[in-house]
Image (cartoon, rainbow, N blue to C red; front, side, top):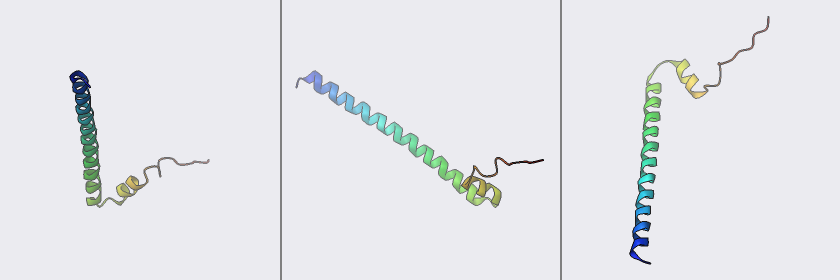
Length: 66
């Protein structure tokens, strides 16, 4: 293997590692935001907000017959 190929392989590996770290940083940021939102929700005494967070699809629609 010549030096040029080894250099390209090393560079490619470094780029892949940097991309992986960037994705991990984004995931950690999202997890931190979700954790903060959950802590804020738990600290509130608003039962309706807690129930809506647990099951957000409930209560959005209703059937009306006249």
